[in-house]
Image 1 (cartoon, rainbow, N blue to C red):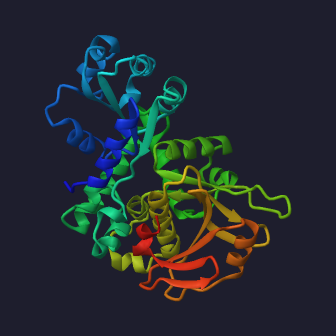
Image 2 (image 1 turned 120 degrees about the horizontal axis):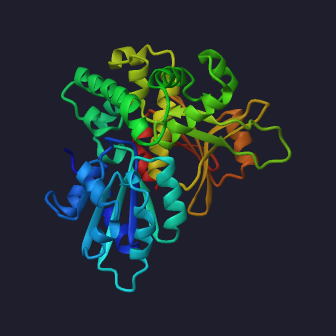
Image 3 (image 1 turned 60 degrees about the vertical axis):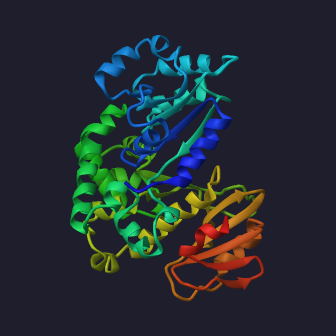
Length: 378
């Protein structure tokens, strides 16, 4: 397994600041491996609530946790809701002999408990698998094709990577969704997820999806909610605070991991990816995840007017208004949409992210930045 020193350093800083740190992300993205590196492989302070015996003793968490010292790891914590009120009590002790690292694959219960029980006591860090800062430049194409999940990316060959992703999708649908509290048909969810892959990067239309699948619009929204809460899908909301123009007000949807996107569409090799009809949309989603991983904004939006002006990303970073335009082109240039976004959003900086090699100033406040240099912007 590849070492992840930057993430470990970030976790250690968070644990130094906060009595409770919650590390959330999809299953198999590396949460457990990171926690094991922090607490030790054989630590008695590691509790995996997927194990039946551990779940049983955690039915009364005070008996287990009250006397512990040092770092305590609670893996798959969403399985025991009674943990959270008790963690609040432990976090409020005058003396804090223990710190708690809570791992979760997301569920409505986990989110609700963290918001209600641990407000002001918990720091939340989201993990998504590998990013540009953790791979070599020569591995960027593999990261795009195979996705960020460590076992998929590190597979010995493309065939093994594809098999892993197909098995992940099946296990997620047939077991994980149910375990996380989502009572949905695996068959219908697979059809929904596959269809969503065809709309990757487009405006969400619940009526269109529901009609195609023969389900209600509310059911389509519930399916989307489930995939979003389990980190499978990103629902990017539109920026709408502008009274002068008619704006697009429906979100865009992206399959967050391009490896899963390609598996859902049967794309197993770079040769097939180059002829993929949604090549540009795939790369856009890939770049969006990397931009957000680098800048880590609290919120991010896209901008689109009914007249056709668009910008892929808009967010605040260190008090500055930042826009990002993403295009798979070898010749970055200013567009009408970029001029409109600069004026409408009052941008301090606009980055044009493209798969090239040269960093070029396109206009005042506008810079073309090679995809591989994203991390230098932060």
